[in-house]
Image (tube, rainbow, N blue to C red):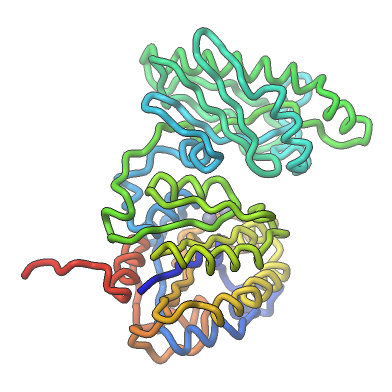
Length: 409
Ligand code: ZN
Ligand code: ZN
């Protein structure tokens, strides 16, 4: 038996004024998801811990069954792994945005006007390989305004401050050591020099000259955050005896799964944006089920629209995703179980993550069922799975497909 875990990023929400007091899931009431909830079992998930707003990184670790309080070492390494950079022990990885600063380093735009992937890629090639004080500095673009920086060389530390101030109108402060160690000081110095030199190169790059001419914010600064080292986590296969793969657009999701030993499947047009190739992701999931026992299928757009405070668009996106999954449901091999949930709640009238639990459904031939017949935050609170934690999802799913060994004799 096999299993597919579908994660709709930031799926959980609250009642929205713009939706007459309904949550986006209630307003969408997607036919397929309601049917799966009616035939399957539902519940609510405190992904990391009750009331704790979590990031996508810790959320996905938890949903794969890894306690994030034990295994999380920062977001940077996951982004780097997902971007296809092999990390060695001692490497320090950071996630970053192309941003816009003025001549006094005052932050004008955290995303450089959400610069396109094409332009960002061109800019990235001018700063991809660098060496500062004997330390190799690798920059790699991922999607849109996002990228990763990896520092490679002896004697480095992840204990450095974030450069991204998360608020425009403030001066960006260069990385500072967060402890008194020589390693943290060296890392902060190396990164500061790289960021300063990159700022000069980017400012005069033809792509940015063109952007300024068009009145667009130039992508002239690399805003780093989330420094970390490669996490040491037991493989997914050793935990559950399942061969797994991930179908996702965003680097972070690929990276978390790669750290757990899952195969990363590249899908043309899976961009991690609202225009992602949903049909291609469904095709890839069905194809990979031939050679894998477990697929994590991730869709980012629900979270993006929540951050953009667009509840109505989130409703439409939920419907669009559910429609694309109709084919997955129809063509699913027999004896496959489906689970569907979110990695956190992102209320679309707030635009940021909150610690409310997310709805979960599990559907498949072995599932006992409950009395819930709709898939949303309110209905699932009465479900047979009750209220569980993120780390419980994978064991429950693994139990249904007979992958867990007995505890005791
Ligand atoms: Zn997320
Ligand atoms: Zn988010």
